[in-house]
Image 1 (cartoon, helix red, strand yellow):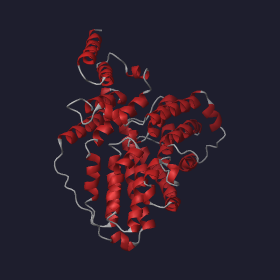
Image 2 (cartoon, rainbow, N blue to C red):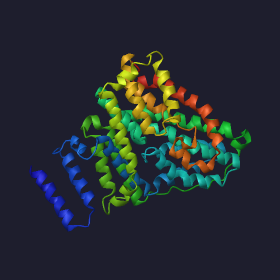
Image 3 (cartoon, rainbow, N blue to C red):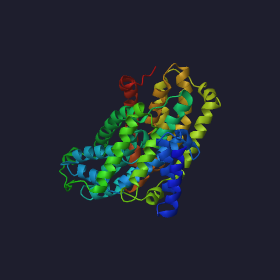
Image 4 (cartoon, rainbow, N blue to C red):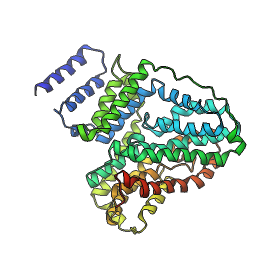
Length: 416
């Protein structure tokens, strides 16, 4: 009771006597009460679900990191180490994989790395430049699976699993499952793109990308890295301290926007949050939950044969982008159906849901299939996407299938 009064009194004083943003002060007060245990994490539902809070805080963290220029500088430094076009493609794939840990949005990662591509394109011949233009959005989309906050669809899947089974896939577990698939997908995609769009001579051509000296980190970059690492460490160690991920993320977001300490302002960070996306994600999560809780998903799932369920789920998820363009909407439609299907077939709902979400990350066929593909539309021809999809779709499906059968069971996610 006394702590609550102290926090409330401090908030009133800060509102009245300082130029601090009112919302920042209010959220800081809420975070203090959450961390001290006065408020339960469920109190956040008064202002939105935990999934929404987690993604809002992740976007604020990403804004703080992006404001330092570190992700783009790191990506430029990495690709600057390339000596040939093939080396450039693989270093680009690796650099794009790393951005998944800093920016919780595939469209945000595409916008962040677009200037890097434009700089590289001017130093390559037409075929190599077009290949790189296809590679950037392709790798961005397929490597989002590396982390729970890599796409809103992942959070929706996690929420639906929690609603249906009482247990989701936490940040650390998702990292363990997703990073191997993301890394292999990135480099396999690089080889496929090189094979389809460049000649052997092109691939061996030396590149004249200037090396950027990474140098010492600036103060703002050190702060950004420290906050991100602290938040990630807290997410990974949740089983020991039991602080919910959204509370950890909110605390990190407040630190990175704290005046004189943080790397960006609270107002600037919030102005970049795609609120319409968050509202859409919240609405589709509710719809997916309704499908499960009402029994409608069981009714529809009963029309599908459980035989050969894993390949069916993967193929359906791969093709779903042709009729449902939004990644979040695809998960909201598919996962509520996959969960009862898995249960009826005696399979692990979490394994099938994760496989579906990973496969649904493939959305490369049309320019309108995903925002990253649209952002790089000037870099390739529309028929290039069709040519890529014919090869990359089955390869992606095989990679997800192999991971589900051969890898994930050893990481705690068995099929049965």
